[in-house]
Length: 211
Image (cartoon, rainbow, N blue to C red; front, side, top):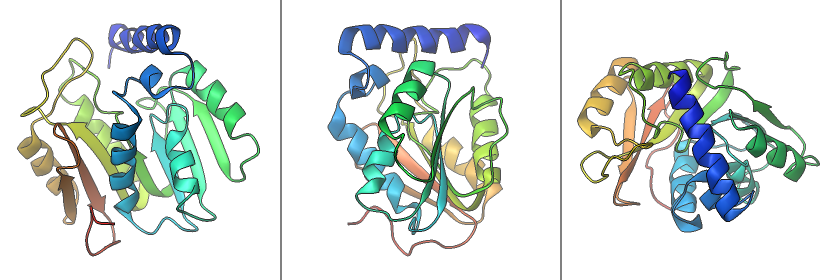
């Protein structure tokens, strides 16, 4: 991702912060809280997160941490995002939470820590002229996970691209992921224009997408 593309993302979110205030899902670019929670629910089925460590790539305000707090116990959470405003608010919100860490950095450039699970919600939805960017990021996230990783993407068959966001070819993404892992799973249908892919390094659950 080049400097202009990164600057465009930062400008977009700062404009959204001015319009909708800091700490809101619309400042993050989500249509609303319901779609965000649906994505979180699917991602949380990546495996048994109790007592595990996880990395949240493109963490925003750390909303995934708040979602998991009501469902998972004694987990270590690491969030990374390039937006300083997001990280500052997340650090303030969760300053009293044990085993919780936030870092402001370009996640495409920094080295990831080894964790049990790597999750990414919305991080791969931004437009990038480099066609290898998305595959490189998937490979990087997969390499940092010892148990499994999961990410969601906008589905090109149902999402109309705009100047900032881009949909992805489902079949091409699945083919790429199957080159990385022999154990690839997918959940669709929770939103019209979104899909979530799981790459396991060990079989974590028997069935996904169910309560």
